[in-house]
Length: 303
Image (cartoon, rainbow, N blue to C red):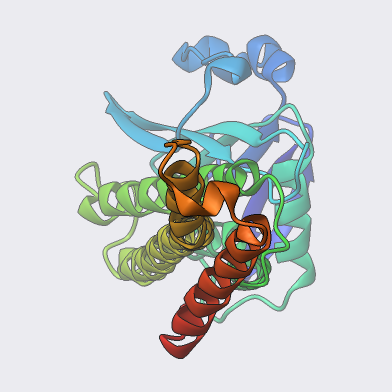
């Protein structure tokens, strides 16, 4: 499917070959590109979609090759991948899904700018890639915040599993924003003069936006690390509470153990062994010692 920029609007040409026209872009599947006469003219090789792992833009003789790996924002869904070739006043998208077409149709439905050009279309396409990212980061922050509340309330289960999932997600989008920013830097350099000098100034705006999102993702990463530290602190507090209880119990029963050991020696000259009230005396003594220890600990506010 070929599109062009005419009268400051995006127009659809159809499936005919318009590669020789100016200010055109095309969306093809891998099989369509292999069969396309345009491919036979310029003989460009594609990467297999399953091998695309990064967003990057590489320079070649006479064209730029871009690969996009856009992480899904929903759990369980696969990432969106596509490729593109950039020539002088021409762009070819290679996409086996409808991802690129959906974005182009959305751009067509929007009111285009004045003096619309292929460069501005490409900029708008990049901007659409980051649509909803701020809301996504806000939702991610809420997930971390809720996890922190559950940690403080001691209601969280499988904390490490949930935190690992969040940290992987943050790392994934952080790399994504960084890679988009690097791609824009390549476009800004415009060494091949594929874009007009007056329109290429829009790409730094997108690069700044990607860098801001990357900074927010880094803030999310720091926040996640803080929550993990809070969780470790809570574990330490719980362990300290357990050790405190064990220490108090041991301290309370230590005098009783001494009394039991003392009167367990069974020396013949011990008067309590033959005393009528010896057994009752030891019981009263043990209770008195126990009560004294408890009173001291309460006075010291140890429990």
